[in-house]
Image (cartoon, rainbow over all chains, first blue to last red; front, top):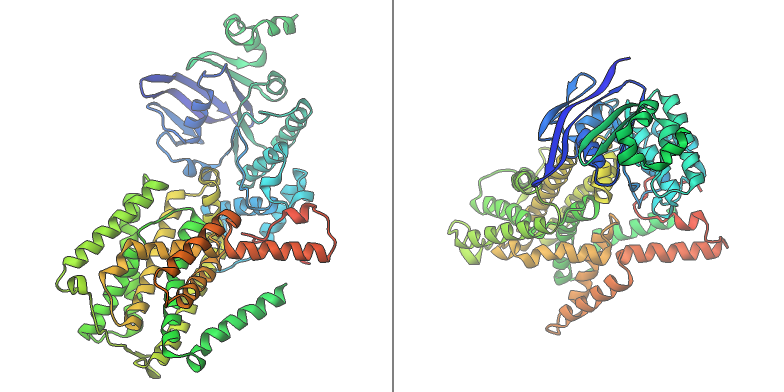
Length: 258
Length: 340
């Protein structure tokens, strides 16, 4: 396996409040890596440092042999990073189909995959076909003409996943993909991610609170608490770690272990 | 629906081009101003309605174009008029790039509005001190040029001739802006207005796109100013006044900022209100104030949005369609139309 993303001894603080205190991790190609920890542990900040929304103060981040430490977020996307947000962000005034079309066109433009004449007002048919295929894959085809603001929470989450996938990412960063979902939606979303991950041969990095989702998806886990790394390893290694049991997983895990 | 739109559009064009044949000089002059202000309003709304940036000092770009064109025509430097318009566009674009690079880096919301307002006021005051630009009196008796096209030459000295030139020039600039707004570039601008962060994570360099929109808007505002100078035949520092900056805003809000044609409808309506109340001092302001109040409260998407809504309801009633997914799919900002 080759390393796709490498975070090396990263520090970040907001004012005088240190949020990340020397975090290091590697994400291998085609694995699913989860970051967990209680609220305020620094998961989201670590996530934002990796995507380029905020820059770290110390340390180094490399992605696919590129040093991306000081690179802007949109440049990282052009290198193959995709991202969804904790609260789904879609374009509310666009229809479901238009949401996907702008994302495909943005990819074509920013990666110069093919030229889009500025005077051509109708999206070209190849773009519409690609959007249609993606919408069918996400089970949103029947709602393609609906304005995105009228979608239910779960549909918005799926549409946002579609926007991210339209960028054909090599690595998909999911910030709490099942936040605020009902248990049945969680299962459906987990299954959807498993399916999409396999179909697109993607690497996934995610934060999540729900342990069932983590155990259903992740190969390896980083456990954080107060900006520090508590444990990193496979699910079994992390489960067996006594400090993790103390700090985060609590009594529930003792039960689960038997 | 498409037929109605085409007929309506053709009728508007016909009225616009035939005004010199049936209207008096006073109305002709106002119609020419409407064409200029229409281009100016559309330029401003490329930023506000499409990109989500509010400039409160856009009259500065207009004034730069107007002064450049007026000065060159008075000095009779012999440059072709079309070149002067282009030069005004370049000057507007340059001014926009310079302010955009400084302002857009950090500010987008209310700060951008205040900064642009301040810069425009500074420009107005500086122009007022400039002897070369006629101080507070401005540049008066600007001659109307003739149009040299190589194969033919048109004298634009008469009101009718210059008006027809205005019609064509305005149509070309409006057509250009229409293509910009409705093409893939415009779709990305609309995405940025709705959610800049989401757009960033589609691999789009949002600050660069904002700067590009700002530059295009500055260029077409400058060109609107260049068209204005020979029409009014006088350019004063008032053209850079903040009150002039509010005109495209009010027109866009009245007509509908999220529709491409909204600012055009707004500009025409404002002129009609102004003209029909011209004999009653202060009434125009009162009527405009009340109309704006009603629009903002009752139809936040402007007159064009209101018309769309009425049409939607009418067609829904005719086809007895229930409030399904179709009813929810509004018509504003759509670029994918379903085949009926």
